[in-house]
Length: 229
Length: 384
Ligand SMILES: Nc1ncnc2c1ncn2[C@@H]1O[C@H](COP(=O)(O)OP(=O)(O)O)[C@@H](O)[C@H]1O
Ligand SMILES: [Mg+2]
Image (cartoon, rainbow over all chains, first blue to last red; front, side, top):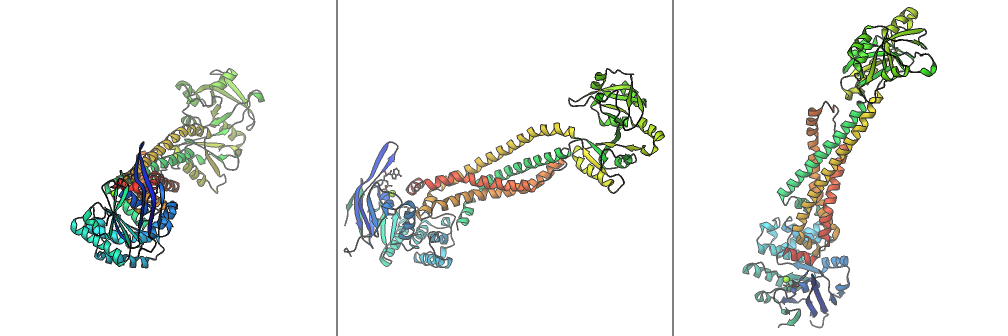
């Protein structure tokens, strides 16, 4: 397994933000390899740069220095529009606050990323149905987000993340807003994506309990990584 | 799907959207009404060039019309006064002493020209004296005439020497009243003709017609000319031009003012819609971040926002345009005297539509720009 090339290769990445005249150095010379099929938890105190690192991996933000190679593609040199296209194919997103579009039904929310692919309406419908069945939400497909509980919304969001069949799933505090049962449910689903479908899952969390679902844990503190078992 | 989303987005804040749509409807209503007023005004100016019409032989001025037309014209609706006269073409002393002189039916003619100011005693004297004449102040001054003078004109069209007693001198009440004219009794001319050349008697050179409503000028002119269509002497009726000139220049300034007001109305509603869109976009900045994360592009986002803005303005624009019709009717009832023709033209509707689309587009541009340029990570931070 370790003879394979890592699916994510982060090399000497730095990132800082400017707030007024102050420069906040968030990530300093980070290097990390993530193997394909991994379930990684990125942990650390609030403000340690977890989201920043995850955004860089997912191609939502640009590095200051260093490079990130994903599946053999160096995303740090891609243009904004190439990055956009790359994300559609390669990354699925799960957020803390689910981030479903409130004016769309569960079904439509899951269909949303497929609109940017070349699939026909019929193919899209099949994909959406499959994804919703997987998260056990097909009966709620006509419901709007505000008609669903937090846990249900997160399950729809998970369906949306996998519907394009990306190799990598990134999740930023996916259980941060859920109660224990719903959180367990969501984590169980993510484990299944990892175990049954072979997705590489990278999950940011500050909750050690949630971290137990992961195979390995990286600690981020003051911009520096340290590895856990 | 984008279309579905933007429609649903437009009605997320029902109260806010309804208020904005109402504002848009009222603005378009005001815009359409003001434009209709301008239209009505121009129609009015065209028609209202005079409260006086001139009817002459349609072939040429030198051909005359039967006196019998007088009563026929009087019966036409909208006609208030009918007077008539002939260009006399008399010469005073020498060719270089030219002035315009007319034989007119004096009573009705003076009714038609209230701007000729004549002292009452002189007016009575002139009306009583069949050989009397009325001259403008400038003309009297030019030849040093005073009341009671005998003035002799030599006929060029109607041969012979014609003697007149100067009974009245008129002053113009208006700056542009012509004070160089010479008038005498048409009966005096006609009776002489009856004796000398009966065939050319009872013929008038022109009818001067006073109408009740200047805006009806075109209609009445048509009615007169239609009446005499296919008769021996067909007529051509026109408005008096001199009247028109002053009127148009005055109205120009008012029209400019109305146009300015319409622009201000549109500008205000543009600001209102832009503000509504700005609020909506600010609230949804995180949502747009989600769209971008999922791979949607700047033009998708722009379409979503400008489309939503358009939905609001189009709803308002259509409502406003529909409301313009009953409003115009009410308006026309209230001020029908001034604008007897108060119709909403196709041009007004096209203009409403154009304004609606432009407002929708422009109001959406700035919020769309903001949503497009916000970085994804930044959008999420603002939301969380
Ligand atoms: N867009 C930004 N502009 C300025 N500062 C930022 C921005 N994004 C993150 N930061 C700062 O970077 C640090 C790390 O943030 P973040 O990656 O969100 O931490 P975590 O997810 O671990 O809580 C914080 O101090 C945060 O305030
Ligand atoms: Mg975070």
